[in-house]
Structures are given as structure tokens and as C-alpha cells.
Image (cartoon, rainbow, N blue to C red; front, side, top):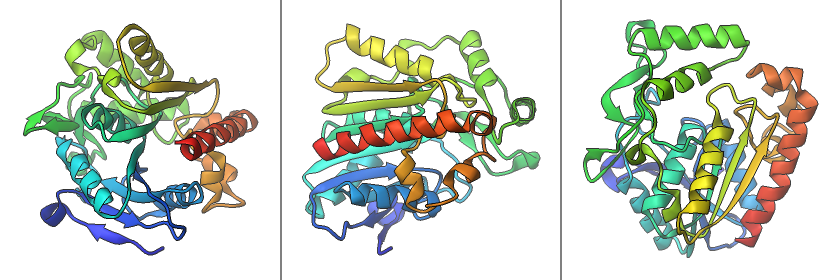
Length: 306
């Protein structure tokens, strides 16, 4: 796939622009996984191309895929480049940690009029490193948030554990649940130890246009449906200009991707491959597939109507 690369040193952000072969003027910032041009990203790019969008993939430029003090201003720079490329509508899609980043960015940048958050939190998370320090694949930040604005860390919910206990606890939970990764117990404990305060919460009422929250109750990374419910309740009780949709399901795992998005790069083995990531995708494979099909149908309509 043809792409144009951008780097933080020269452009203020790390990304790759994938122009749609079919002329269009909708530009979407896509954050899937930890990279800007891997298989998961190409899956999302192909899906968005089919639905009439140009795509700028975005990630941190850290080689170990860490997230700490990533500046909100970098998203503003992406929008500026998308405008120069001839786009006049701007959207953002994130999954997991980047769903939190997508919602936060949209709350600061009114040019963004479509926000899709797959398995989001409703608060800014503490930053984290994946530098394999002391053998840990992930560890908490050193008083850093995942995001910053104007040179200052955004207020965040601190993790319940410090290094090296943090990674030890995550490994124990993943093994107990039978999942590739799990942190739901840690996030629940984090809130018990430090209840989410107003300054930590994402100001979803500032988001413009359309926002879609997507999650499943069997998510083992965190209780995303509880977070989604809180954001929807916040919108119901706070003046806002956006239109929002809540797509929550009993089964689907942390990977609530549209089915046809997965099939863009894995036309025959997508469901089989997913079974090796989260236990629920094996135990409830049919229900999870139906969730992805329903998400697919609804998100395609949202993107095309935008």
C-alpha cells in the first residue's frame, strides 16, 4: 500500500498517510495497535478506504511502544496536514489505550467531527513504558500521564501497582483468566485506591459532531462498558453539541473490531486467529462474531453518513 511517512522531528507527529485510490475529502486519524504500518493498521486502512476516507495512521514514535506524555498538540498538527491534503472533514478512531487518546484529543480539537472509541476508558490513564526494564514487558510511568497538553501532563488515574509488582500482577491475572493479556482487576483496584476525580475524566461534552462508544462486558483488560455508561450519563447531564451512540455487547472481548475490517487482511482465518488472544473468543466464538458483525454494520453506516 502506498503511503507517505511523517516523523516527530520534522512534522510534529509520527504517522503515515494513505490516500484513498478513490477521490474523497474525509480524513481519518487511525490508531490501531502500536504501529503506523503493520498488519493491524493496514486492516483498518483498507476498511476506511472502502468506506470513503483517506487515512493518517498515528502512533508514538517510541520503539518500545510506550505511552507517556504524548502531546495533544501532535493531533492538531495531523489535522493541519490533512487539510493540506485536501480533506475538509476530520475523524479519529482508536482502540484500547488509543480510544482514550482519541476521545481526549477530540475534546480539545473542535475540527474533529467523528470520534469512534473501541474499548475506551472514561479517564486519562497513567503513562506506561514497554522497555523491558528488569524483564518486565510493561511498567508504570514515573509520575507521567499518557497524554500532555502545553507541556504539562494531564491529570490521570494512577495504577494500583508500582514496578516490578505491576507486571507480576498482570501476568498472574492473564494466567488466571486464560487470556493473552488482562488488567481488569488492577483497574478496578486502582479506582478503589484512588477514585476517579473530575480532573482525570475525559470531557466528552466538548466533543463535536458524532461520537460512538463501542465495548463488550466480557472485556478482560478493563470494565469498558462501565466506563462507557459513565460517559453517556455524563453527556445526558451536561450541555453538549455532539450526537452520541452507545454500542455495548455481552460478548466481544477487548477486540471489538468490525468483522469486515478483520477480513480485509484475514479473509478466511480471522475468527480462528482471534481465539488465541482472549478466552471468551474461544468459549463464545459465535456470540463474539455476531457482535463484530453488528458493529460492522452500524459503524459502516456511521462513517458513510458522516
